[in-house]
Length: 468
Image (cartoon, rainbow, N blue to C red; front, side, top):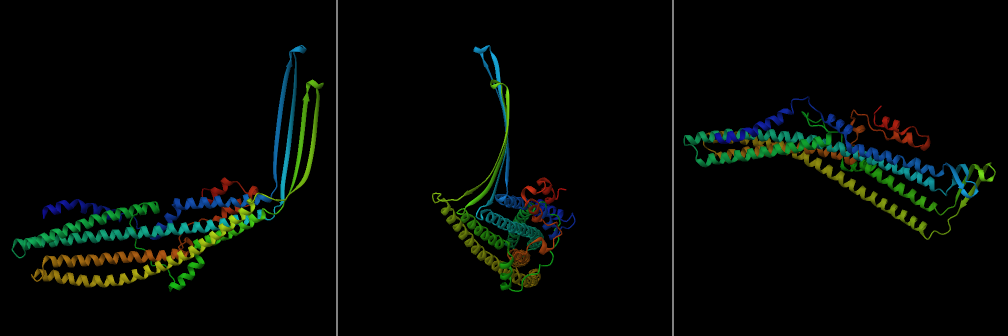
């Protein structure tokens, strides 16, 4: 008995330290965790940077119907020495400056289609950013509730060790006076060893949950407060399906991709149409040649023109490009249909999980009530000699299982509720009312949309990222 107590003392100390340190700091709420994750998630930083990159495709596409101006300059100096004519040195120099301009005024609608496709792509990536935000928030909720669940598991396991330790002591005392046999003591010792193993296992699971929490939220969990009341949810699965079809950002993203693919088909077909462009050139030349009497010649030329390019035959490349874009459109439409089915499955699964968790909570509470009454009765009967030590240990295990089932069911209810919100497309900072400065993609887009007329990009990024 003393050996068992000594061997397990260190384990109990570790458990008390791990659980106790979580109660030192001020209680951290689920809202606090979600705000911290939203503000510090590298995953969201990646998606936001990808969206800003896509924003730049809009001014790039609009450049197709904007003038292009370039300048070039050159200067040369040539020297020569003719030894057959008294070794005289001759030299010549020239300078030139050219200013060129081109302006496509008609391209068959190619640029307009490219702009529309770029705008649709931006809409798609904005929706995907919302998908990532939902994923981060759901991971935060799950990690938060996992830590709380495992803390409760550790507490239950510690209590179970204490109860079985008392049962082992009682069995040993009764063995000393001849009321029970060595078998009863051995059964209690085996149950205590199993309880100790269960506690160590729960401590390991708690540490893994803490690590997951840190990876998602960005800070170690402190004293986690009980979660708030469940968010408002639809009254039926059919209502949930309707909300998901209208709001889920993954569907919004795929619909935008279909629109972008349609514009790209239009863009490919525009390549069959003629292109009209204006062009101009201004040249300034200056030259001096000592071999020609030291004369200096200067000149200026100006040229303005227009050109029309009509594609007649491109070896089948244009037709192939159209067919390729049409195939990509069909792919985008198929992906939209596939996503719609996936969302329906997610809603149905989350709804079923929520229903099962709520039923499990009710049955687990009933089981706990019955198991506690049975345990207390069997303990009393064992004192009178009507029950064996094994009966007491089995009943204690039944009570522990019922309590653990309740803890798991309560965690599962919350996770299923927030998973359902995510499947509906409503797990957002706005819908949850989180106290954060929500990332606004319009800030960067509006500042760079006009291409060369956009303000300094560094200042824009400072404002977008809150570095001012």
